[in-house]
Amino acid sequence: MRPNSASADVPRLEVHLPAPGGGRLWAERSGTGTPVVLLHGAGMDSRLWDAIVPALASHHDVIRYDARGLGRSTPPDQMFCDIEDLGAVLDYFGLHTAALVGLSMGGETSLDFALAHPERVSALGLVGTSVSGHVWPQDPQSSAYATARRQQDPAALAELELSIWASMGRSAPGGELIETMVTQNAHRRIVSERQLQHSPDRDAEARLGDITAPTLVIHGNCDHPEVSVIAEQLVTGIPGARGQLIADADHYLPLRTPELLTNLLLAHLP
Image (cartoon, rainbow, N blue to C red):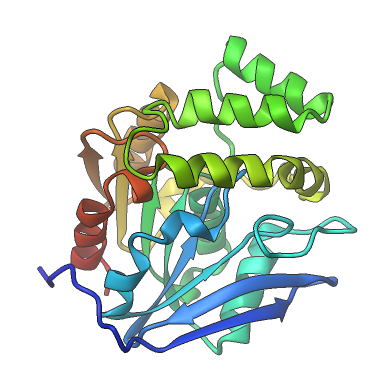
C-alpha cells in the first residue's frame, strides 16, 4: 500500500469551466499521476474531500468539482443532466478515461456514467452511495424530506440532513465543516434539484451486472440503514466488486475517517 502522505509542492489549478447549456462549474485539479474525479453528494460541495485530496494528489491527478448549483458552481436556469456535467468536466481537462470516486448522489452519478460510457471509467470508488432505480422505504424521515422540498424550506432541509445523515454530530471529526456545508447549500440544493433531469430510463440497480470497471464499495457503520442495503446489492451485483465497512463513520465518511478512506482508495485506484 502506498503511504498516506502529501507533498507540499503538488501543482494545483482552480477553474470555472463551462457547463452544458450554460453556466459554470467550479473545479480544482491537483497532483500528477493517473486521473481521479471526486463527486460529492446532494446538499454538499467539494469541500467534502478537503481532508483526503492532499494525500490522493501525491499519487494521482485529482479533480474535484461542485455539482450544478452547489458550492461555487452557478445555479441552473434550465433543466440539466448530471451525467453530461461529469462528461464536460472530463472533456475540459482532456481526459478520455478516469477513475470515479463518488459519495451518495455522486456515487449514483458515477454508476450511471459508467453504464453510459464504460470506456471512460477506469475504476469506481462508491462511498455511502445511492443507486438509480432503487426504491427507498417510506418512513417519517423520507416524508419530512419530501415536505421540506415541497415547501422549499431550506432550514428544515438542513436540519433533516444533519440529523439523518450526519448522525455522529458536530463534535465528531469534520462536524463543523459538515454543518457549514449543509447550511450554506440548503437553499441552493432546492433550486438545483428542481432543474435536475430525472429520466425513468436510468435504472443502474437493474444493470449492475453490466458494470465493467473495478469497483470498491465503502460505507460507514453509522450511516442510514438503507445505505447498507444498497452496498450489499452493489457488491453482489457488480462483477468482482469488493465491499468495505468502516467503523465510527456516518454518511460523511471522507471527513469522519479520512486517513482510512484515503488508504483504501489508494490501494484500489489504478
